[in-house]
Length: 319
Image (cartoon, rainbow, N blue to C red; front, top):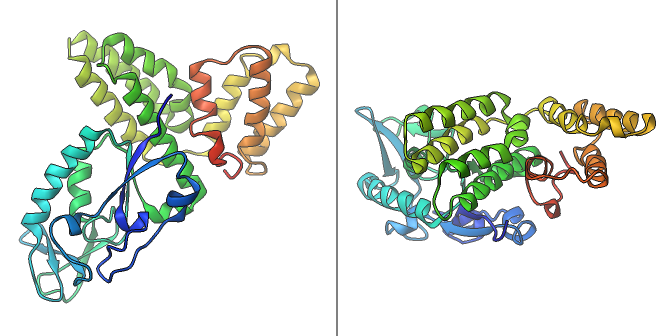
């Protein structure tokens, strides 16, 4: 499809010097290596609610079962300002068509997990939580993929997140002029192998969702959003090599009878090698692509599975 996915990203990860001590936390994968494939939209909630650089670090506290955002140094309460901003900005970002959000870890505003939550006198951490802005954004937009930036240094996490982003980007493209029943069913059919390879159980769940909600005469726009929300919830969890290998075998089965015994054996061994972690995913995929081209079997469903992220990003040779 045309156009690059737009990804919101904590501004410090994009190289802006907006952390509390005036530093950046640039993630060069984003700003350099993947810059030709993604459009980045830097966001710093703390700066946008009026905080300065440098500034005292912020922390989360639990006060009467309510999560609050405070400056630990001077006990300034930023909760109301951050909540108001977060609600407006979360709606705005979704309306602009972002396809994902990459958050800064360990941030009282933007951390997605394991952010320390203090008691009211800041004397100890009582449990781990999620940054205040990240909490609001994910509650408002459960259909938009999210990840913490540090996880992108793990190539398998990076590939899985970017596959979710491009799945979402395809969904946006399909529905850009409005959803109807045919478009929803077509999108599902074009992504069955992708879903099978990532979260096998959700393929059937989504098929039943479409059928049930259409029978109930639900508006197609509502069905499409429910579809993506359920899909992204299931896709949040990392896939396994065995699922990918099984899907490769499903594709292989479409033309295996046309191959010679030697060709079949070579592809079977490569798929098995990938399943065992002995060869990268690109090895069997390249051979599958060769035979699919030979027998003119390329269709959108197969292509979405084989190329879940642009080949130029060179991730398949590393997973």
